[in-house]
Length: 317
Image 1 (cartoon, rainbow, N blue to C red):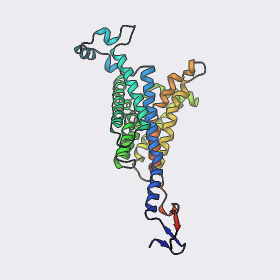
Image 2 (cartoon, rainbow, N blue to C red; image 1 turned 135 degrees about the vertical axis):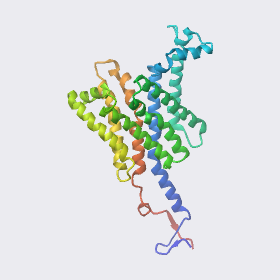
Image 3 (cartoon, helix red, strand yellow; image 1 turned 45 degrees about the horizontal axis):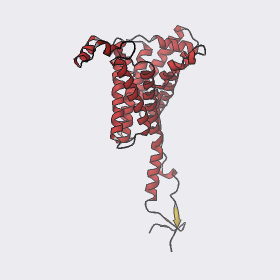
Image 4 (cartoon, helix red, strand yellow; image 1 turned 120 degrees about the vertical axis):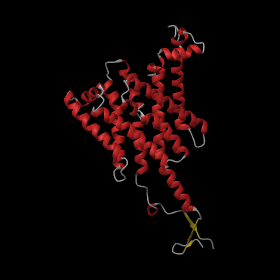
């Protein structure tokens, strides 16, 4: 009859189910926030790049084939490149891409379930980031790690949309998140090891400046870090090691992102060079936010025995 004879109380039907649902909702909130803010920070930083500096699309846009295509639509050379007194077609579109990125950043923290138009804008943001990454890949003389390491930035809006539509714990959401982490750390690891592609000079520079070591010591440190990066990619798929791997990836992703402003900023420069280096850390937010999402997701959930006792009311006579 729903009466606890020992306590003399009658539990409310459905109270336990409601409590479990609220518990699950509370547990799902932190990982969803990681995806929201990771996407927001990444897209807002790229908006800064487009609006304050210039998007790295030069290798795609500044070529005869692009002008020929524009000319077919009646755009003259002066309109295409600008006259010096105003921006041309390409600069204008780069600015528009910046505003689209900013809109995507705002939607990252406001989008809700079944907000299909807003989700479409976020997916478009992923497409723009993919085009940007491809341009950087071509500019690097087609070095594969350059393309792969942007996987986290490209995929975080997609992961957010999957979390809202399929579910924060859905297999597809988690799988895409794991792929994103693997792409980031595989790209960094291959560069740090310098096996087939040369280690970027800024890797040596940041390591030497921050740790105050010579180039040979910096090389050794990078080799160790590169090996650990590749190890993380494997351990993420090992159930007994995935929590440790996600934790390491979150910490290391944050440290490598912060390395840009720490190594580059100086009080001797205008604005301490914050306008040149802070966004370099912010746009890499997915590198630590996606592993943090996985860490929250995989942490041990409280068992039913440890949940608070459902509210009870005195038994009715």
